[in-house]
Image (cartoon, rainbow, N blue to C red; front, side, top):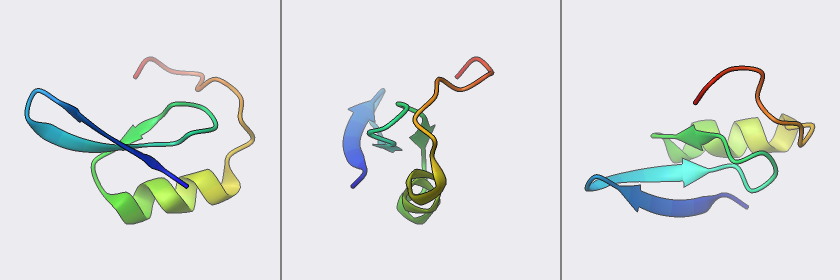
Length: 44
């Protein structure tokens, strides 16, 4: 389940496994379903 957070008046959807942020809920849910829970290899 993705977490919802607001930063700078914008709603973001966060992968609860790795913390990656998405602006589209469906993208976040799809990522989380395939997430291996490792830190992203790039700067967010």
